Image (cartoon, rainbow over all chains, first blue to last red; front, side):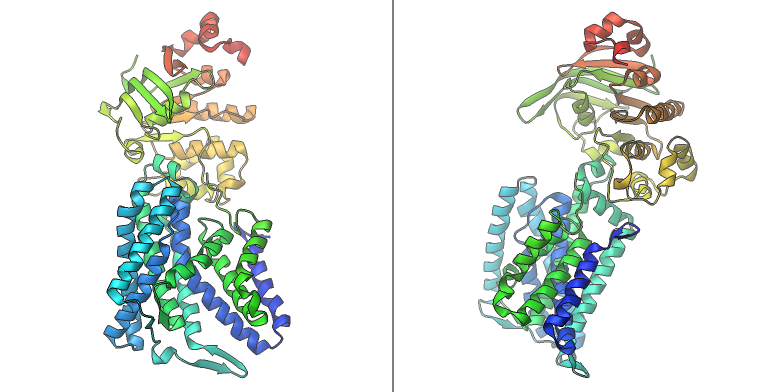
Length: 318
Length: 241
């Protein structure tokens, strides 16, 4: 089932999961609330995961320190919200600050930690894990070991009510930001030469170089952008939970790895659909059978990989 | 013989523990099509990859247009005016035919007149312009790989076994395309196993064996000398056809 070049089957599966949950949940208003919560969670995971999937696809780098960028983004958002007064107008500068600091940290990581171990997966895992431990300790030094509150601005607190349906304002805002990020990435990847280069580089980096493009420069750019997005995701996720700890990034990494694996390594579209699936399944199962919730996404990953071993949107890497 | 555009002198290449190129010396005359022949495993593909900088030469020098390119990175070498068609074709399967060509046009938008020239030989590319390259047949992928290398004028095009596994009708199309490309003064270095293509297109020839050049000269000379073919290639090219 295709529309032009686009494989619609994963989208149909996503819709089937959402609609299939309706009779199980029973109450339509509860279903709407769970669905919006699932979409919000999925889109936040997408923002955090999209950079990592491109980094893996483009340069075959396994960055286990990606969670640090999420944590740093969340902590910077705490400081920035405090600095700018914690109002709605403080939100944009706080998010930009989170992206800037996480992006700079990403540039440092790429140059100092990852550059010496290109093409060496085991060393990448070891050194990025070590880098994550060091960075987490530095976060302790700068912000302290305690849990920090990250209050939402007043305008994003509470819920909107439509009849029996209650939807948290912040979740709607998270959906809007997630859709915006996806739209920006989709436009960049599909409508610009830079996007063409990234997509081609994910498939065959050597051939891109043989055509005269410096893939290393492109990779640094993608790495920094991915780190900045992780920082944004961390800030939004911290605000979603209204609290930040140093483990916020490491905790999200399990979900992020599940998302990029089921999406297809290197595929932004797969990452998007995978993140929505993960978000929806986590919320539906969490409501229907809380004891199973913890393993529901692992089960989802197993089922998808049994169906499509290369993920929802395999990249055909050569 | 015209002056050399590309010269390899004493080039050695190691891949891991393997010593593949063991002192390769040969020159590619400017404006000609040079065939690089040899048995499987002789080092032909490694030779092209070493020229492109995809494998590093461990010794020796590679001169292109009078400039030493031995230590240059692959993008810098490509930007000197080289096009490369690898044996695997290296097409981007997830990108459309148009996007593949757009990416290959480094200096700006696609030149319509040049595209029309390419479509004269590779009509299928026009037909499947908006189709993902991964959906093309093997022959069409090879057409795209070649079109990508020549979508802009290049000083030197390196082509690795373009006719491998293709139907005779498509091979004839490729021969016609390269014959026309030769008229544009583009220098071509082609690895080829198909004698019909090699004899039709080649002006000069270099034969490799065990990582060295064992013969270099005019293609016509080799094509006319069955004994030399047997000695160098282990078979008669006529018989191979």
